[in-house]
Image (cartoon, rainbow, N blue to C red; front, side):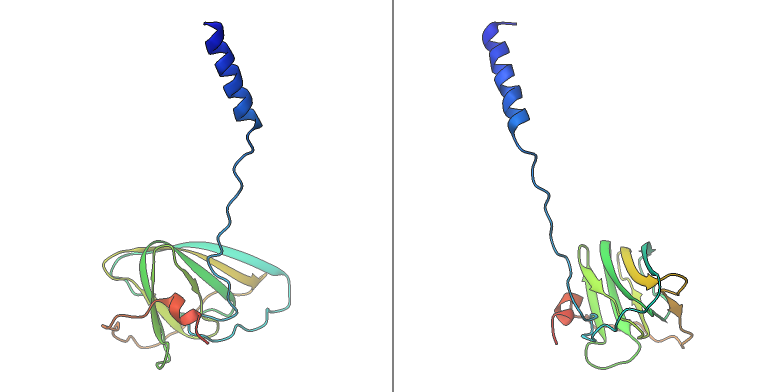
Length: 160
């Protein structure tokens, strides 16, 4: 190998070694004290804290059963889209989520989620206490899925 090429490669190697590694990047996806309908979160329960993280896949054209969460949790939509609705009707009763969005979930309020044309894959983070339920099913009569479009959940969570 010619000396000029060797010298160039040596300088290139030194330059690469001297360059700092790229800095880590942090983006806040959600920071809130309220659930998506604007309800303030309750205080954390006492006891040994326990974090639970679930990957939930909801097929297209599916509706989850009515349920509620006794603990604070947030869902990240990894793929697809989802609409959530509270059992109690009124203002801020439904909202929709798209891929890459975060849902600050309801606590203690009966709700469900449903999909349309696309399936949804969620990563859900629950901040509970050891031995306590994170989701409680509610036995309620079925009700039709709303036909109207729901506002984006992040729009509702920032109100209030």
